[in-house]
Length: 271
Image 1 (spheres, one colour):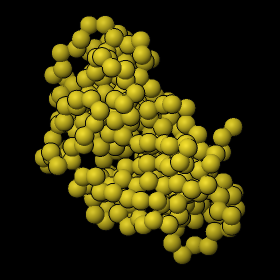
Image 2 (image 1 turned 45 degrees about the horizontal axis):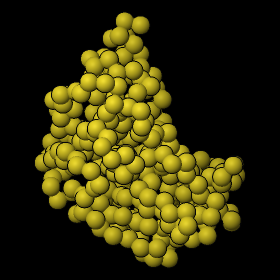
Image 3 (image 1 turned 180 degrees about the vertical axis):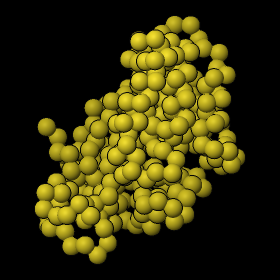
Image 4 (image 1 turned 90 degrees about the horizontal axis):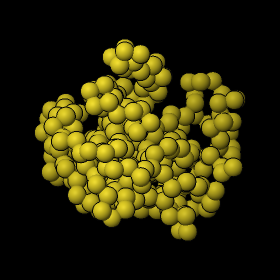
């Protein structure tokens, strides 16, 4: 079994759009990092509390077993944008909005040589090559996974990809055409819901990847499952984040939130 806790060193950083920072980490601490060819592999970055002395060698598992909960490191989940097992280089993209949040400011301040601990990877999605067409939809948080999926899809695959960002300056150059949606100050997810609802659905069996802000995802899940009748096994769909909640508070309620969505969906489907 691959090791799930890793120590990496920042190799280089790049601001690829005004609010997106790419951080490449590497080093021998990633020698046992392994992925399975999925498009939504993710890691959890570990952020220890400042001023707290942790036992060495540092281990999240050891900290949780030996220290009070208030000292446990905070975790932030990020999708793997790229992994080079030969060079031992892991690429992660961070949305940065000034001092807001934890991981974004860390990425903005990161310099070569900085050490970061991470857990993972996890993941579950890869485009089904047998699908008649593909739907990819999300905001900035889903953009790395959507970009990887577009790279993995075979030439000639029928795909409708929608990515919502703030404005044209946040667009990225990707392997296949993408419909870029611009919020321009509107609540996150509104433009995405509108675009997916306006799509003229092709015939055939779809495979969909829909991730982003939880409220938006909830609306799209109901639309795809109830109104469009897409079976759940043809969907990779969940809220990566929730407006007004940090990662810890969202993780604490996500299971109950998902259960409520499923119950609502079952009632609408008459089950």
